[in-house]
Image 1 (tube, helix red, strand yellow):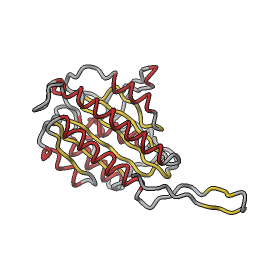
Image 2 (cartoon, one colour; image 1 turned 90 degrees about the vertical axis):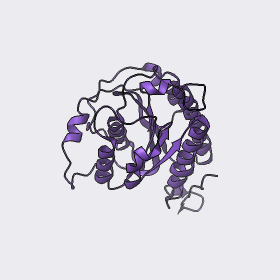
Image 3 (tube, helix red, strand yellow; image 1 turned 45 degrees about the horizontal axis):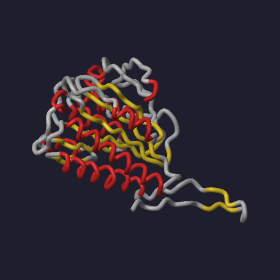
Image 4 (tube, one colour; image 1 turned 135 degrees about the vertical axis):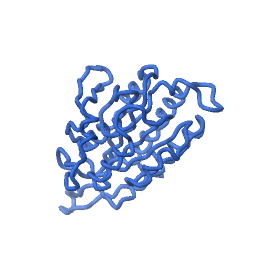
Length: 270
């Protein structure tokens, strides 16, 4: 997941010390989106890619997230952050069962700009949890297209073949390039290698139907309980399950007692 191309990212790196986060500016995002890529202009990984799953969690932190969803008393940003913490527990369980399987996770928040990110890297619960809990109070617009491109760039630096973007949003795009156009470009230039999923929180999921045409899907969530269920369906039920059910196997390891090679195939998550 670590491809350090700067498409869509002109980033001012900021020391968020304990979090190890990078806050980046998106001045080049519209420039990249405004220049259609040639059909042959495919994304190129920065280094070798192999077994594993790299996942970019992309979370809406716009002003509308400060309001409660229908039937909820807490504001949406609080409900969303608690649901994300539950996803970390799911990741812990998955890694405990598959200790040899590489899992990279990053966190990206967006309002009018993309900010407060933990770049896609080997899973670190403490870093991600601190980043979730330290998100600023929601304000500003909704730059979904910028966030997609930012997450995509880091997925190509992470070193795994399997790449996923999971977007949680409660609104339509208001700033920057169209998410539908960005998603189609990502799908075309990655040749379907980047799979994109949306959870439409307190908004009609049909507004994001475009993702179904780019190797992805969208689920709706009208309140907090539905949000947790939809995130679990996509994250555990699709992303993690698919990563382990793709016919991949762990690298062969030397059995010194018999001086032969034996391979270890990871078990499917339960």
